[in-house]
Image 1 (cartoon, helix red, strand yellow):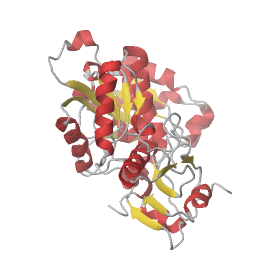
Image 2 (cartoon, one colour):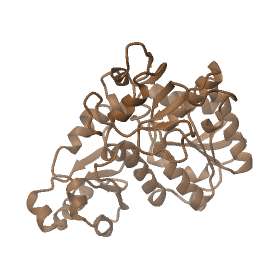
Image 3 (cartoon, one colour):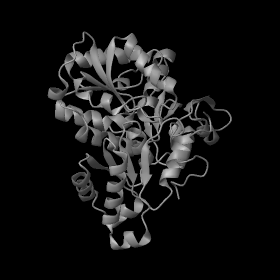
Length: 371
């Protein structure tokens, strides 16, 4: 039971991450599940549900359909809904029962696409992972299925560096002002935003992504798509979030990436020489945001501040002295007797009273509790 959660809520699941990433793109997202996932996603993990419509449906998988492998019903239901609603694409997400049953989502997607003439693809989820995995899978599916070619798009005349913002979902950037801060950072540094993936955006914007010179990855949900676009189209990427004094380092790294065509994780190098590696000053959370905030604090304070990473995607996104934690007990063991902790207010309940705590809510963890 060392991975049980007794104090902290669990992070939003991978299905919620996939839905959040695709929410504004005009498609139809089908969650293949008996019931519950849709209301859980809307109620706990989505800030836009009462402001903007999105075609997100539950399949209503029954015991008998699961036992007999009756995929025809799912296909027929999707085709019927698509004929009526005319979505721009169809994405099908998995959940535990069809995952365990080995449901062939590639076949289902091909059959739906053949019958409707609408681009249809599966998104690799199973409800066993956190939101970063689901959003990352959705973004890779976008790269593989929805982008227009450079030949279709033509050229954009611009004297500025053209960028895509990858990994912008309300699960990490819940307020519209959070998105505006990212856009203002680009504007103030003469970076032209081609596409925002994918909050306050549209499919028409995202389709143009191959016109960008550099992908700017602002959360771990965008790193897989950035690597895929580099592999397929040669677009390099820079990873980080503009915050405080680190924002200048980040902007300089984007310019350097444009010139060198070499990808970089910006916050890994934003350190101050001679700092103690075993510091007990921590920034807790998702690795790109936590790493960037920690880098800013190292620059400002001249003290080593370490990222404590609590989400699943972190390969290549951490320094050697940063810490990865799985489950509440591991997090508590690290931060309980810390000197300083920056993170979601729920983490304070794992700390002793003597710990200096700076609150910054993480919507994917605490939802609307602190918004």
